[in-house]
Amino acid sequence: MATPKPLPGAGGPLAPFFAAAKRRELVVQRCDGCGALRFPARELCSECLSRESSWVLVSGRGRVLSFYVMHQVYHPAFAGEVPCAVGVVELEGGPRLTTSVVGCPPSEIRVDMPVGVDFEDRSEEIALPVFRPAG
Ligand code: ZN
Image (cartoon, rainbow, N blue to C red):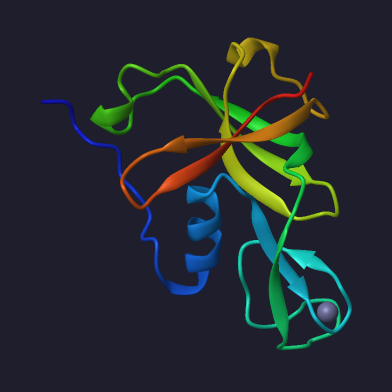
């Protein structure tokens, strides 16, 4: 039997994020005070210090801000996937996600490459956003 991949918990402050991902939607927090978008979830807005926020749907479009290619297998569940790319994707509006960049060989990934969100089901409760090159 294959080793399962480690999964994040679907509860806690990111529960709305994971519930949306399961619906194939990408959401981030928006400050109710100044409108700034942010991810991951935080209690306090770093722009205006407001504690009020809402989860809002975003386009899922962004660009690769930075990335690295994993060649070493650090967990047996990923043995069949190396080399693979982990990137920081900056979404429209500014929030950044550390995520998998899939859909092309890692050697073709470039900084500033436009990408769009997709979702990979990992369990009954968890779907993870990943990003693919945008057409
Ligand atoms: Zn704010």
